[in-house]
Image (cartoon, rainbow, N blue to C red; front, side):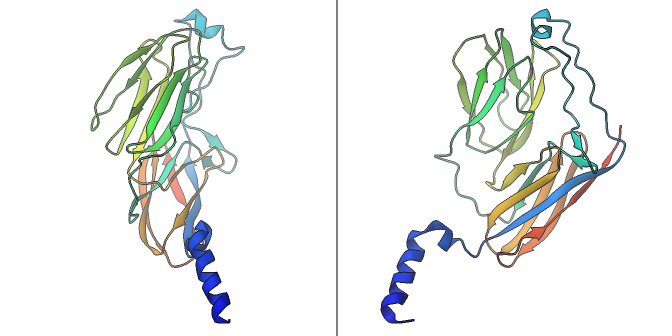
Length: 234
């Protein structure tokens, strides 16, 4: 390559983000289970007839969400050590909504310091009560047709969220110190991209079946496959 073309290639590499990150890799895999998982059951909303009227048929619980091939949903998979992440300042807000007397997102994963925008799309009031133990615990009434509000957590923690008015409402804030995370859907798959070469610990968390961790080494752009197998108890 002539000197002029070499200088131009170096300049383009410094300007284009993907060129700088071309040596990064990814961890990908699937979360499955063995055994008999807890069955989704109809949610009894009879204590609030206004909630019952919002649904043509009863909603089902979301503690265990499964797919074909024994795949497991609502599992948070993240880099628990090895990643050198920058502060979460300037990140876009995550959204946590209440609609139909349920949380539209059962497990919401965010970074420590990232703002969570909490809204109420229902024609009735809710009480947002995240049961934090490491972070500050708080509780706030959110009447119908009132503006959304935002909140951010400082420390890493898996926080159950409930509504004191409607006790069947349950969700989770997964507050993580890393930017490398994913929440599986019912197909059980996940991908953690943009990982530079190095050694990492990959951790998977499920609200009923616990936590597992695996070690992995990224050496280049070839994806590393890390699968997780949970033992389900009904």
